[in-house]
Length: 73
Image (cartoon, rainbow, N blue to C red):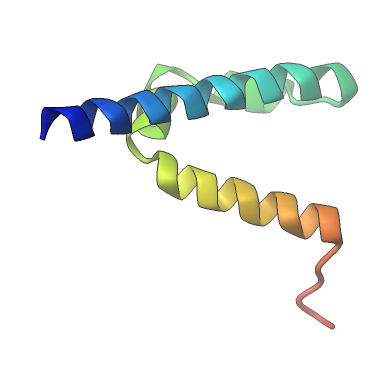
């Protein structure tokens, strides 16, 4: 049981590290300073604990942006 919890938290930590790296990369190309200010310690902990939800939101946004999916059409 403890192995599942540790694995879950480890995947969440990797997810948040990837999000931080993505913010660093986007910061060079666009203005994400306000988003960077909004992400604090508690947001990171919630991101680690709720990483499946964060992954779904990220993938949905990525796919919509990449394939230009419009709900109006």
